[in-house]
Image (cartoon, rainbow, N blue to C red; front, side, top):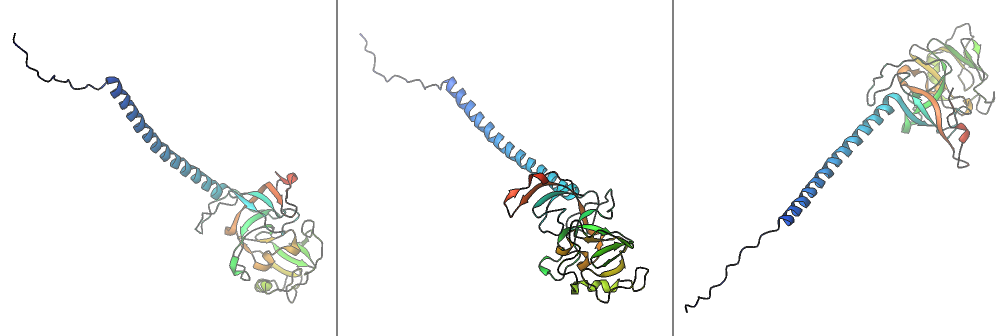
Length: 265
């Protein structure tokens, strides 16, 4: 009998399971899709943040800006710790980093409260032109003067501040900051002669020039106002306070709930 030669058996190459290959492809595709989604979500997040910041900056610059009352110069109308919203659109919003104001829809009225950039206060070079809130007691063309603590506007006596005493310590104070008044005071007018030296409670008369205003604090014996730094240019006005959104008493460390939502007049 013919003997068959002993030859090694040919081993067929192992075939990959189609199911396994399909599973691998699905996982890889899912990973690629996941990475793509992560990149897409990151871009969308940055885009959304940019839009939110742009909207916030536009609102804060052109429409409404929060403001905090840091001093007692406007008491009792505004208290230290009042946080309020200021309407910036009414007098024309100021374009940051420029000297340009956009048109507004209203004009400042005598007796209204306004937020404005103070003219230079050279006695405090560390904060030369602070942003302040005061009541506009004089508008262009008004003749203002004060005698013994009583403010006169066009010859008509005004009530002394809003809830303050008629006389307080420092009433006859003289100050070098009052010297600007000497250049504009009326020496001869129907309102009588000016004092030889302007003091805290005795000054004027003088006329508010065009496109300027005169601001004073309601708490007049605790207010550094236009008596010290002069007329406020129209372009310096930044807005009109609207209402208090929160008020915090720093001394008693409590919220003044009764002032929330208080409309400012």
